[in-house]
Image (cartoon, rainbow, N blue to C red):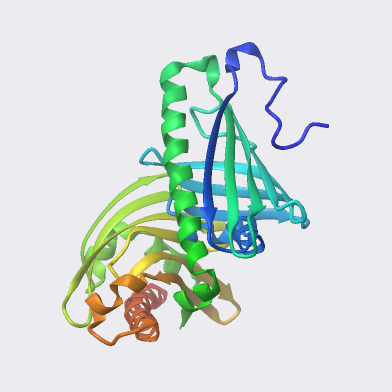
Length: 327
C-alpha cells in the first residue's frame, strides 16, 4: 500500500530521480513528550526557528491538512502538506501537496524511538525531486533541507532538556481594545506596517519588503527606560479573516522565540482588535538583562509588561485612526 512516506513512483522522467536526506539526534526526554512536540504543528513557529506560521486546514485525529510558511535558504517559502499521525508507532509522515519551487515533490517522516524512560532517538527523513534533476536545484534543496533539519532537531534536543519546565518558560497572553468604527480601517492601520515609523512613537526605524501577503520587516522599538531593541519579523496577512500573524526571526536577548497575531473582529456595535503574544524565555540571559537575583518569574513579568505596553499602544493608535475616519 502506498503511504505518505513512499516516494512518488508515478512521476514522469523529466521530474528527476528521488533524493533522500536522513538526519538524526537524541533527545533527553520521554518519547511521548517528543512525539507530542512534533504532532502539534501549530506550535512549531514558537519552537522551531525556520517555521514562520502553520495553519491547520483540517484534522480528523490521524490525517491532517496544513498550510505552512517557513524560511529556507534565506527566503520565505509557502506550501500545503498532508500529514498522517500515528501515535501508537510514534511516527508522523508528511507529503507536500503543492511543493515550493524548485521542488517537484517532497515527502518524509518523523520517527520517534524510545531509548529508555528519559531518552529518545529521533530521525527526520526527506525524499525529494526537482524538475529535470538539475544539479543546482538539487544542491539548493539539500543545503536548505540540511540547514532546517539540523536547526529543528537541535531545537527539539534543547526543548527536550527542559520539557518538564516548558510551561514555565512559555508565556502567552493577549490584550484587546474596543473601537467605535468598522473593522476595515483598523485592519488597514495594522497591515500598512510601512507607515508605523511615522505613526507610532515607540517605533524609531522600520524597513519592510512585501510580496503578496508576506511582509519581511526590520524594526527598532523603544522601551519605557529608553533602550532600543532591533527585531526582525516575518508577517503573513489574512484580510478575509481579519488576522495578521507574525514570527520574530531576530529577538531581543530575553526571548528565545516570539510569535503573535493581530485579530480584528467587527460586530453590531463596533470592532474588537486583539494583540496576542507567545514567547519562550531565554533563561540563560535573565540575569544579564534584569540583574543578579532575577529569575524566570521576573522575566515573565518584564516581558508581559514590555510587550503588552507596546502592542497596546499600537492598538490605541489604530483605534484613534479608525475612529477619526468614522467621524
